[in-house]
Every structure is written in structure tokens, then in C-alpha cells.
Figure: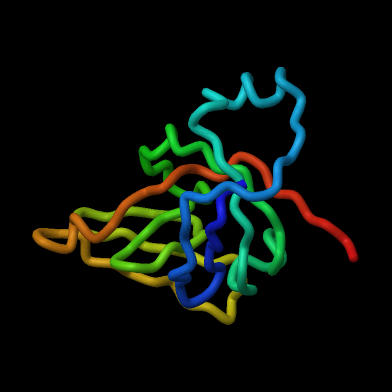
Length: 132
């Protein structure tokens, strides 16, 4: 798990390349999903993806899967923030959608200089939840 917090809300600035806790997965599961060396775990902060992903959940992200597939859930970065959202794209625009209806879609203009500010970190492959 990398020490990064994905915002399911207004955007997170919490990132670090430092690794933290390890999680165990069956090798066959991981290999079916993609290249294990491209995968990282990140914790989610916020409620914009509820009820699908809850505050505190852990997501497995494949950083090798950065091509936008409409409707799929991705970790994305825009400017200094990182988000967990479903993505749709239009010419020159990316639309970040929350599962929680309290959060309206966020439309990003990714033309010109702003194109360098947007990045797809990777597609979400798995969500896990710990109960206290």
C-alpha cells in the first residue's frame, strides 16, 4: 500500500511514494487482472463514491491501465489533487462522476496547458473494507 489518500470528495493532496501496510492476494487473481508490478493499494477518504466505496476503504489500482474507459472507476489527478471517480470523456473535457448524488459531476477542461494538469493514475480493480 502506498501512503496516498484518494479523495472521494473534494480532492486530496496527501501523497507519498513510501509504502505502508501489505495486503495478501492470490497470485492467480492478481495475474488475471494485469501486471502485478503495476498495482498499488490506496486508502479512500470521503463519501462521494458511497455506497460503492466508503470512507476508509482500500482500493487496488492498476497503474498500467490508464486508457479511459467510460463509466469505469479510476484514480485520477488534476492539478495538485487526486480523486477516485468514474470517468466519461468528451472532446477536450473529462467528466468525473461520483456515486453519491450529493456530489455533482466535475467537468474538467483538459485542452491546451490544462492537459498537462490531468493524469489518469490507474483503473480500480478491487475494493476492500475493514470493519472495526
